[in-house]
Image (cartoon, rainbow, N blue to C red):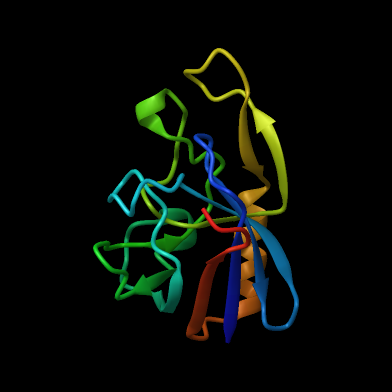
Length: 152
């Protein structure tokens, strides 16, 4: 099964995208800002990846450890698809729940993170989107193509 992730331009508040399965189901996506593939601070390099259901992981108790993990990501490890709301640049004071992973969502919006004094752009209804995504993919291996809709 194929998944296309088309990224919008990256900002300090995150890299938003459109996630489209080969059957045309789609969700919004969120990753960290582009910071030259720096682990824990950047989204990953664009490219084509294989993702497999990682059933041994205890990383996500809410999903019983059943999350997709991208394999052979240059310079990175443990890149998964999981629920999250924020993915800002923490070195610039923004809130993040991601360390390089990819989150699906149903809507885009702005919410007040716990430690900030103003709203931050974010992904909404991520757990619902993740459940839909997991149901749609049925545990099949994925070929994920990540590209920039416009060059960075």
